[in-house]
Amino acid sequence: AQSVTQLGSHVSVSEGALVLLRCNYSSSVPPYLFWYVQYPNQGLQLLLKYTTGATLVKGINGFEAEFKKSETSFHLTKPSAHMSDAAEYFCAVTPYSSASKIIFGSGTRLSIRP
Amino acid sequence: SQTIHQWPATLVQPVGSPLSLECTVEGTSNPNLYWYRQAAGRGLQLLFYSVGIGQISSEVPQNLSASRPQDRQFILSSKKLLLSDSGFYLCAVLGTQSYEQYFGPGTRLTVT
Image 1 (cartoon, each protein chain N blue to C red):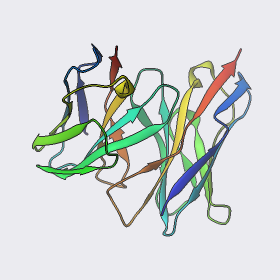
Image 2 (image 1 turned 90 degrees about the vertical axis):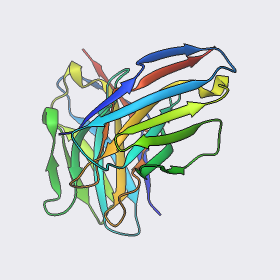
Image 3 (image 1 turned 180 degrees about the vertical axis):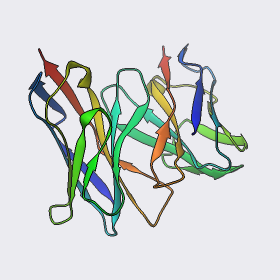
Image 4 (image 1 turned 45 degrees about the horizontal axis):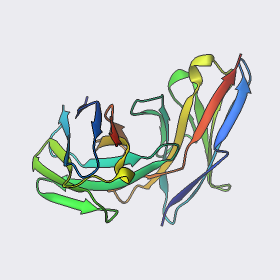
């Protein structure tokens, strides 16, 4: 069975500071991993994904994430936060053997202080 | 690329009234389709998914039902709404490359 844990339901950083959103997963088979962003009253937008190959994945809006199998982690980072990054972020996992479902974490709300 | 439409964008309905939310997809054929709900301040809850016309899998027994009358149409319904049905309803389609899902703009439902 797969599961996702996002540490911290709310993260607040200053504009220009490093953004680090934590995600740990549990999967009995090699996973595909995703980060989504949701702005208020909008649907989810895919930020980036890890499937196979390079463990450091770059996404849109300057975000990147690193797949660490030994730590079962897929943390999301951005070197310098911008006010427009304020949103809800969801980590998600799916086993590559099944196309039926994605398991989502509970989400982390990112606030940016001016 | 796929485009997902959801209708209506917002809805206010009294308790006990029926519900019909529609999701239509463009740019793909025979897609896997999903209905999710977000209650206020909470994460995503998978309600239903469909791998083809007339094929519906229910994840949570509740007051809602889903139907897929056409290949690219997915409908969420209720005969009698409850206050607890309030939330943000999202339709999603499975991508064709790496099992990611793409989401529609959502429907905000308020049951009064």
